[in-house]
Image 1: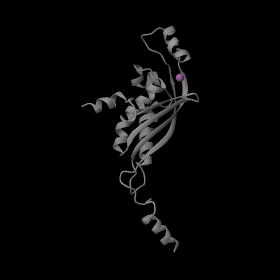
Image 2: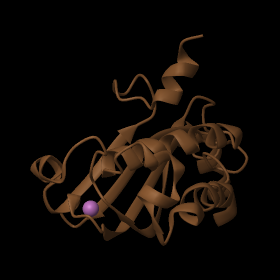
Image 3: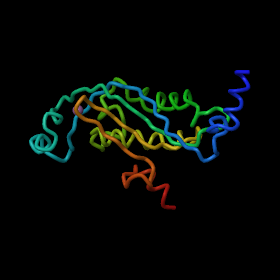
Length: 177
Ligand code: NI
């Protein structure tokens, strides 16, 4: 009797069992890595760099425990009830971001930051660039990368064009054929 009640609810109720095909959701995962960086532009003097970046320009660098949040968007799969395979998403972020960046000196160990100042904003943008394609390959769309650098600051990058004008350069190149 109770079983019938549940089944009735699924068929005639708020349709929790038969989602409309366009029903979308956001899915976020969180992970972390530790890395060192130094904020300075090569073409500037030490005092000029310190005027811009303060203590962050000190010559031997300093470290952070970065908290990374990646949000994807997509239709909820009618069969699995998921936006995408959660384990696959975790694997992509682990392999492309955490594994290469954890316990590194970003300026020296990550080629991209040899010529790009590794601020939280630029790291988040680079992470968005790294993840956009692989996340599309697992059937979702990268929506946002949030990188918390300290209890006092975090950077957010929105990877979907309609959301904001902030688009990683690689995405811009893809968008304009
Ligand atoms: Ni710093």
